[in-house]
Length: 311
Ligand SMILES: Nc1ncnc2c1ncn2[C@@H]1O[C@H](COP(=O)(O)OP(=O)(O)OP(=O)(O)O)[C@@H](O)[C@H]1O
Image (cartoon, rainbow, N blue to C red; front, top):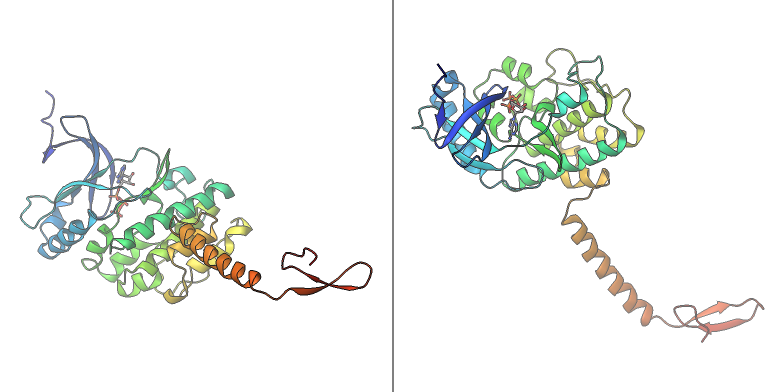
């Protein structure tokens, strides 16, 4: 006899997609066939009142996240009264970055991405973080299994969830969970900030560039030097900048995107505005500039226009 399908709101849960620290993720459909990734919170966390309150707060803000490189919130029942809190996110079809590179989290080597793909990945991750931060959230747990490589480009999932977990975990749990992509200040003081996300971006990119995580070994409140052996030289400055120990020294996602050669929309508009202003300024000054002296071939001096035409 077939098992009764389990439903959450209008969603019928199906194939298991993965199991994380917060919950279990399944592919789910509604009656129209619309697919979502349904995350159902683990029972032991659902019983923890404080966790539930934090989770509800985080989920309430997820609706504001809309971007090309993030998965949107579709539906949720995450209130403190829910029997088991769950969220339904846009389903992204494609392998995780973790699977694509080869699942080598420790030194030992997967299959690194070529330079062009690395640059696009950096641009997409920066775009995703810019979207998440713009909505007033932080990701808090960016890692290769949270990056899905869809046909239309990489998409980041699971933002906001890790922060709900942070306060519920002991230092040791945080270290174990966060290794090896969390920022040092996250491991030491549970400080999830936009700058901590940029550190994780650098660590994820380093994984994609080398085939191994940049920090292997035990918990590291103060990280040693990242192992970037095998990373293509052009991305080294970007990796080093993101992996700075001092959060204030890390670039913003917009700067990361620019360094990767994939400036975010808006940056271009701003750049164009700056260029237009500079052009207007220059042309005003050029037009009103005194005609200047030009030394011509025969050694005599002539008055010439600003464009160099003889006067
Ligand atoms: N929106 C989504 N679309 C498609 N698959 C998804 C989506 N969200 C999550 N998944 C899949 O479910 C897996 C588990 O996701 P989840 O975010 O719970 O786990 P995690 O990131 O491994 O763990 P943690 O909760 O500890 O951060 C992911 O690795 C991915 O394969």
